[in-house]
Image (cartoon, rainbow, N blue to C red; front, side, top):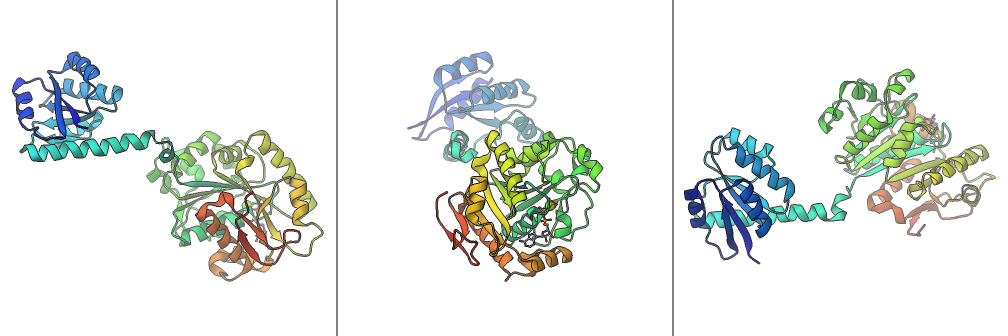
Length: 402
Ligand SMILES: Nc1ncnc2c1ncn2[C@@H]1O[C@H](COP(=O)(O)OP(=O)(O)OP(=O)(O)O)[C@@H](O)[C@H]1O
Ligand SMILES: [Mg+2]
């Protein structure tokens, strides 16, 4: 198939000059126009693949025509041939939505190659825009939620973030426990700026401005700290959180969000923006009761297909078994993390996550496993103890479909 080219220029001699530069078996000149609304009709009737337009000094009408074409016929790609390719001309062209701008060609061979390259690149771009899969960003937003305080949400958030960063993933850790967030303590970071300063100072955030409010941990994790004092929590709106998360997800492999143990606007926004919800629960009847109530809320909001149930502080000797947990909550356990008070508290007090400070501990092993499963594509895996009835000591991954 030949590339169909339409030539547009106000000057007759430019059309002639351009024609003489097109001599390629793969390219066919299908028409020419002097510009203006006649050009639009011509485009409509001929559906060119490429429109070549000449641009002289001060040709604002050419640029506004180019802008209209770009907007209304995105599949006809524009090449601007400028009389004088200076910075101002280039800036004006880019502002009009044209990024293919060149000087008058010096040989048909060179021009032919240029046209074909532009056509191939632009076709690929258009294809990827209409290809649904490529629109789904590969980034994973994980919200860590639990129906009570003290379940280990922040412990899991901090250690998982560091572990993923150790595995060379780009990780953002967001402390949305807006009143009592303490992720900076887990990472031994003295917060300078927090999410409050960010939403107060920056009206239209971009990734650079957001990053300038994040602290960088030695592992490479970027942490957006919770407000310094509980009364600042209300300055952070759900709308701000929503735009923040959608911005971050296009720059990080993993955005990990820690939450407070209550349903509020901000938590709900994070949950809805997530691809995965780590729902942390534990082995006592009060936690299970609250967990069941919370899961019912998530069900009513149609969020449960994202839920991965994690039993933290799991101990072998307990009157409540995994089967009990699954029966009470009504969902399969996706992972369990053993109880090791010494390792967990020591890590917290030192501000060194156990995945780094105690890499051989069972806790570390289980979080490392979690990160592996996430990286490999989590949804089809279940991380469980070998014994499904009692909480086994060892961890294993088996690809049991949920
Ligand atoms: N697997 C574990 N074994 C033993 N102790 C743990 C474990 N996980 C967390 N802990 C300890 O439990 C306490 C609470 O943990 P953490 O702060 O992570 O909970 P949280 O769910 O974030 O609580 P909050 O909702 O109050 O923020 C901490 O002292 C932590 O060291
Ligand atoms: Mg916490």
